[in-house]
Amino acid sequence: MSARICRDPDTGSWFWCASAGHAEGVTPSHPPLTFPVYGLAAAPDGPKWLDAVLGPLGHEADGIWLGHGGEPRDPERSWVHVGTFLRTPWRVTPAEVTEGASGRAVLSVVNATMPDLDTKPENYGLQLLDAATVRAGTGAEWQELTWEVDNRLVPAAMFQWAGAWAAFTTALAPVDIVAFGFGVEPDGLVLARIKDGSGYGFDVAAPITFPDTVDQARAAAGVRLPSSTHPRWWPPHPDHDLAAGQGPIR
Image (cartoon, rainbow, N blue to C red; front, side, top):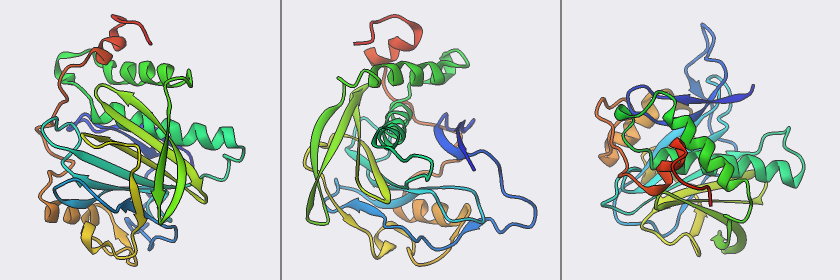
């Protein structure tokens, strides 16, 4: 089953979603996770929570996002989200694996720094994503980093956009790790495998029910639910002008 980019009409968020919903009679849940999930060993001040689970319901999840500190689009606090994604079987070569992880990173940071869409054209969000993807596609915009994951040093790559950053590593097959954040130095991040999800408001050994598991974790952390009708927007930034062709893609 393939994935596509979806937009939540209430929050203005762009995200990877399954290309088809669950069929009638399929339990709206995922079985317990079978792949390792990683989070920050040293997180910014604030709560930690399970923020999103990806993949078709009734099947194993494809990926999971964990929140640390503040919420995305909050320029007043530091925050980092860490995603662990099961590598798709059709991405075999190193170039294909890198393309998949870097694409998630770019989408994530564009979404996390989305300006007010109420005053923008209908397709403005996708234009921003296109502009960021073009810039990221040059390769020169990615800076080499080093992360520590379970006491192992691994290479990572980082892309900056609208005052925030996104980064990834593909050194931990069969999963890839993608992170995006603000107010936290991306080089030298220390991550660890999450064996007890209680610190994030969920049980890593239990099935994940949609949407209850994520909603309960977010509520316990005191963060807003995704269905909020009052979305937060990122402050205007020169990178946003690229969507309207008002600036060079550097």
